Image 1: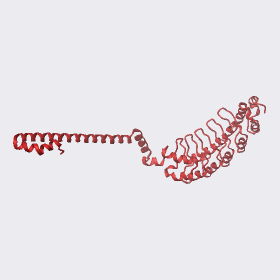
Image 2: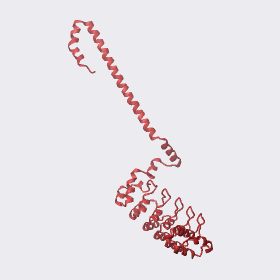
Image 3: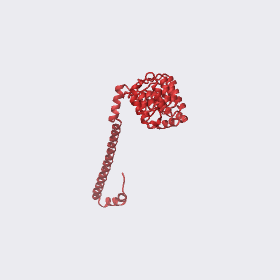
Image 4: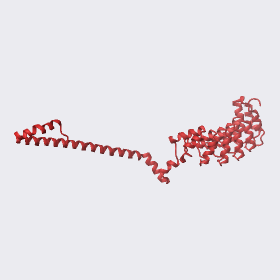
Length: 314
């Protein structure tokens, strides 16, 4: 018990004198002081108890808040979905990482071609991680033409035919960028040559549209299908004719592409070439039109007269 300086002085000097002179008064004062001290002690104990109780309530509320945060509706819904599918929530995060901020570094390393940095930061669960566009590391390596990184990722078990948000596989990305060596690597590893995007576009469509003859020849050498049509019913030959690419048209025709095939607007590649020439005569696609006109499967010239009259002099 804490004793004040005043009370200590009373005990040392005043109480002894008072006890001798006025014993009854001394007893009353002592009893009063004891009751006061006891009341003060009770008050202190009550204050301490009150504070402890407050701490306890705060701790319980804090624990409940954290527990509710862990068991949020979104988390509960995800756990119910995983349970229905027979998935282990603890394993799914590792097995299928998505849009993890920790993966930003590894995607940067792949995009820039830093193989040594990739080897330092690579982890087992990174190999098929996805970025914000749902691209894998192999998509990014292929789009940038980094062959060594492609080989490294494939050797670590990277899936070759994963599709991004637009439905493109790494082979689509290689065809789009014209990376012939990347196309070769993917085809050697068994990439699906006729994989289609959400618009039903194949790698050969893209190579034809972009004018990447080397890529188109590789795809055709591995038996790419020249007859596949996209959502607008356009074949790779339509795309080549649309851009007035005589070399690409010849490559596709030599691979038995059908020059009489029609798109949704009932246009053949010849219609497309003539229309393109009419709209942009400066492109000079007359050689391309002459090439298509000489094909045995092209409709009779008479049905083309109206279109040909609209074009510059052939």
